[in-house]
Image (cartoon, rainbow, N blue to C red; front, side, top):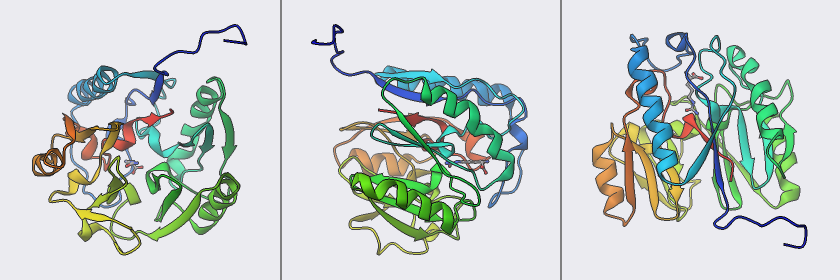
Amino acid sequence: GVLGHTPEWPPRRIALVRIPASNLDEGELTHFERRPIDHDLADEQWDNYVAALAAEGWETVEIDAAPELADSVFVEDTVVMFGDLAVITNPGAESRRPEVDAVERTVRAIAGITVERIEAPGTLEGGDVLKVGPVVYVGASSRTNAEGIRQLRELLTPHGYQVVAVPITKALHLKSAATALPDGTIIGDPALLDVTSVFATFLPVPEPEGVAVVELGPTSLLMSASAPQTAAKLSALGYRVVTVDIGEFEKLEGCVTCMSVRVR
Ligand code: CIR
């Protein structure tokens, strides 16, 4: 190229991940009862999750381990990408605030990324942010407050995004209740949502663990192995569904989306 470097084609796709903490079993719980965590199994499930991303062409970048930050594996809550803009969050759970510094360092090291931050008293967690083209749905949850939503709206409006706030009282995050297919259809569990009418196209799924899908590419989805009926339903819509067992993380109110951030 004119600048003397050869652009890669296809472009590299980067996903951020973070190895589970040693005290994973002390993670925050809001809607679930605490159940014992099998650490070895959790590590094995995490390895398989990362391997599934790699097998689909994602280069995984590991954020420095934080062995003492119980929920640090749920990296999605700490940074949200909008094209080349990274918004570093201020998690609503106080125990999770120290997670963001290492995430910010890693993101800043990726060429071409601009970084903004949600500042106190605003709180926002990435699990509440659902991007569908130019529309950004944001859960007003126990973790994301009005000031956090206001700051996100102020950051994104100049970039042409529309921020639509959605009340969330029955689930931890918006994306614990609904995510989007590559074609923009919102899939979710009506029992976990306060409203579904805000979504242009809404498709209910039969299992609570089925609400979370990671878009691996335009025709393929990553899903939890705990939602076989949903996987069948989405396969019938023409998607190739890759499943991973993340049962140990589901006990901690995590899901497939929250264990990585697809940077680009
Ligand atoms: C928490 O309560 O913060 C963690 N135990 C689970 C976070 C899951 N994050 C997500 O779904 N985005």
